[in-house]
Image (cartoon, rainbow, N blue to C red; front, side):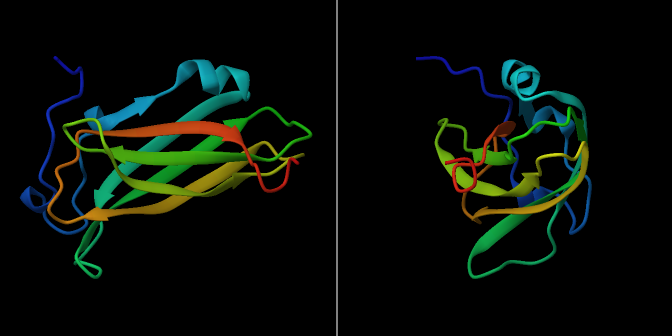
Length: 130
């Protein structure tokens, strides 16, 4: 079975704090429209060093969105070349009543894995919107 994932990268082919290729990022345009995302700007860099056998990618940027009554989260999910989730981060909250937020998220995954794609996707915050 053929997958449509981009060519994976070995994080150690890049120097610490080096920019990573934007081609890794996949956005969910339908979800962005549903949750009122107007602008999503991001920059990927390699996190310096290792953390307990894990490598990391920093996602830094800005998101502008429609003011809404519900809180949203920005999910950042890393996949390997087999399409398996290898890292997950959901700490960026798009708060109700606001319309802009800085993104500064560190995404960690096993150092032995190669990263094929990073999905950035908004969703309702399940903890707050019950």
